Image 1: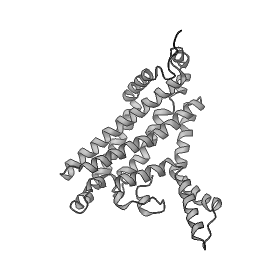
Image 2: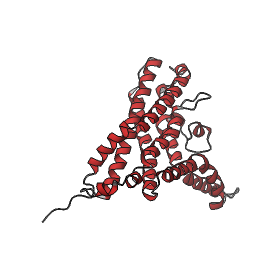
Image 3: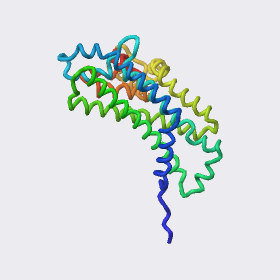
Image 4: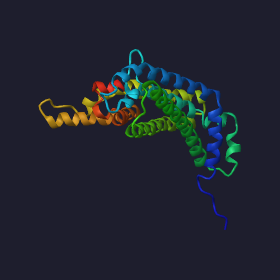
Length: 274
């Protein structure tokens, strides 16, 4: 009896092919240049303030990531803005482009399942994003060592690496969403616009919607402490439906732990809010 292959058979082949295409494409090179220039500008602008904190803060190296200097935002804020754009650029035409080029039938004629095709494309995009973020992370660490004149401690490296993994997971959410729209919409332009619309909703309008919806879902009683706490919890729950909010809170936990607060109305949260 012939054994049927796994549902993910061929995913590795698809992943390696898509990864090679992603890393060699002009679109990705332009996005990589944009991210590196933006990150280097943000880091270089904050080095002066970070250098002044040497000897006062035991985790001064982490401040390179979170310190902002007008008119530039912090390095983390740059990433929160650019990672979704890169992830959407990697995934918005991942599937519908195969239909538009009339290559999907030839791909699926091979011993490759649809699940393997989608999983391979997702992993290729995630690996491309991971390579880009890892290179940027090493670049920032090296730039900090060069300009500050001291190496990071072991705990700072571990926390920075944990932040890198959280940034990759954050990008993976937007990549998966872009691939979903690439399956739903035959037009690549429509998939890109739908993906950007969802990103704009969470990036700029979600907090306003949470402010409007929270008192409707959980009306606060100013004379009941439990009612007020419940209203706050509902507001936090709604706010955490946004990937931007979760990424900002994760960043606070890893990079700004000495002053951690997870309330969205706190000024320190807005300081690195996406």
